[in-house]
Image (cartoon, rainbow over the protein chains, first blue to last red):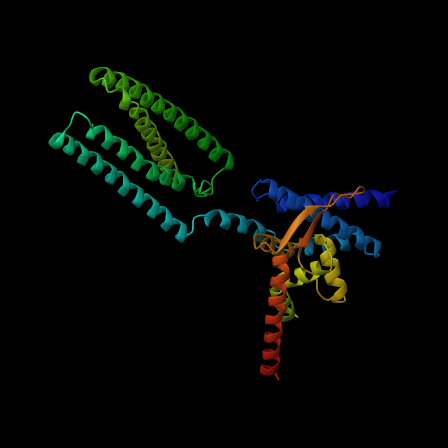
Amino acid sequence: MSGEETKLNMEDKIKQHFNGLFAEAPKTRKTLDLKQEMLQNALDKYNDLITDGYAEEDAYQNVIHSIGDVSELFVETEEKNLLTLPEADRRKRAWLNAVSVGLYIFAGVVFFFFCMLDGMAGSRYFDYASFGACVAALICIPPTVMLVYAANMYPGYVKREKQDMVEQYKEQRHTENRNKAVRKSVSTIIWTLALIVYFVVSFSTYAWHITWIIFLIAGCIQSIAGLVFSLKENE
Amino acid sequence: MSITSDILRGHTEAIILSHLLEQDSYGYQINKDIMKKTENRYELKEATLYSAFRRLEQAGYIRTYWGDETVGARRRYYAITDEGRDAYVTYKQEWQEAREMIDKLLK
């Protein structure tokens, strides 16, 4: 009877030892699983040693001794977080950004060129300016896609600071909420303006066949705005 | 003795892969097996074993699954992948080469 009791006590002692070892560990699903698994191994070993005729205290010491330095298990997870954006990816991202900015400028030049053409060789049958806007909007699609891709490529890249986890979480929640609100209002403003511009331009020019392009441009602008936000957040 | 255990620790991954070639297994079982094969002269520290598991998993050499024990605690089993088999073959060749060279150098 008393033997059963001490056995339970020793198992509790081993559990407590593991609690102490994992106290500093990040509280993730993975480390909890790991702790459970290692604890189970330790308990199995303890019971095997008892079966082999070890004294309880000796068996306990043996089990504790064979755990080793668990901190190396957590160091690796932290390192992994720090290394999520290697040099090659950073360069790729810089390239995506540079090329897309270049394409935006090119789109502007194209539009400007057609506007000039319209001024010089304007004809009643062909609206160079609208055609130019159309082409420019099309040119804007690939760089927008590229920028959005670049911004979302590495969502997990956050600098890990040794800070209280709860504080960090709160802060993150706070900025997230604020960013969401700003994003929402910006997108509302963009679409309202687009609608106003659409009616004003359409009624004043009667060019209904082409003014719908304004909505494409608004979509474009919204993507760019979203992108600017995500870039800022990543910084 | 410390040189011996240093060398052995340097081959932890290969030792695990070798064990998993025979059968799927779990942490304590692997350690028990190592002790049996070395006649109780070598035992891996739990932490060493699990950091090796992590590296092997990240490299895609092993995969894990939960066992379906009906009695007692559920166990996480480790199994070798095809990549792991290839890696083990390469590793063993390299070890053979190294051993030959050391044998020649430490006459």
